[in-house]
Amino acid sequence: MSAEKRNALGKGLSALLNDSNDVLPYKKPSSNNNNVGSNAEVNSLGSVNDIKLSEIEVNPFQPRTDFDEQALADLAASIKLQGLIQPITVRRVNAHQFQLISGERRLRASKIAGLTHIPAYVRTANDQQMLEMALIENIQRENLNAIEVALSFQRMLDEVGLKQEELGERVSKNRSTVTNYLRLLKLPPTIQASIRDGDITMGHARALITVEDPAQQLYIHQHIIQQGLSVRKVEEMVRDIQKSRTKKEGKQPEPVSFQIQKIQDDLASKFSTQVKLKLGSRGNGTIEIPFLSEDDLGRILEMLDW
Image (cartoon, rainbow, N blue to C red; front, side, top):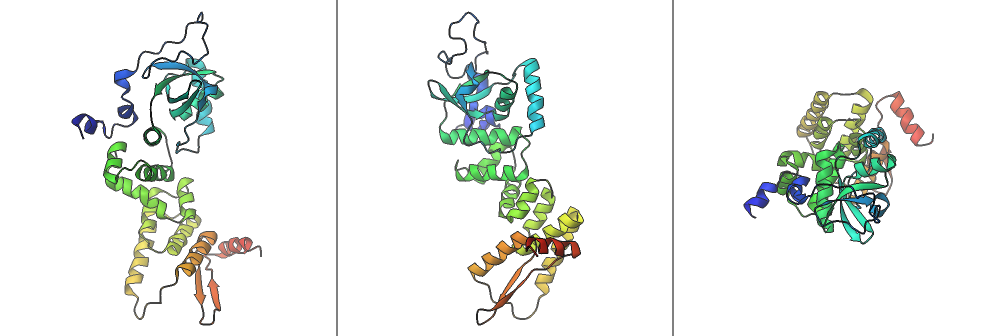
């Protein structure tokens, strides 16, 4: 790897696009030009062009799915008043079609503002480069929730082929931070949804990750939601669980089969509590669904359509 390429790592989208070297000043097409409103005269790659909004398709690799409507409205109002200051970035698909590389929030707000054209950098990028550019821009420039960041990191590992060290350099984060985000994706879906929706914090999530049993994770998670537990209190609960486990004496129970474990995990996820499935020697058994309070019992009974 050359020194120049190493220096670009960790600088984000601008380093990948190298805007400072090849972008020409933006000039709106002259009103007496017969081709005004047409993309027929798109300038050379690296320049800023005025492109029809109707000819731009969104980036299929966009990791962000949730856009704040009020923030978009505020940006649209600013665009109406001052115009779009920062161009979006697109790649040409054919003579009259472009695909967004970065700037979907600006694109959406421009449509709300009623624009028909938008200033854009035109780039060449293959699908892998597009994915990396979109992911890096969103991680660094948008207020993604922790699960969206984790999913973006995972896609960069799986689809871009980066190692964790390289990923950390790309997004200017140390490896431990990247690892903590990725570990969120190992939590049960119910807990991931709470992180996504802001019901629990990254501190809560990091404490839950240290618990190996998904059913116990869900049990603690339910306490957090119902009782508003602090991160410190959750850490204490986790320590107590781990101490209790190490002090257990006698013969350990036989490990359950993959099928039974999956059923337990699915039920625990459904009821948001620690569910135990016990099988007898003749195929009979019991299902235990613990509850934390009368209200919690009512919630479970309602789910059972009691």
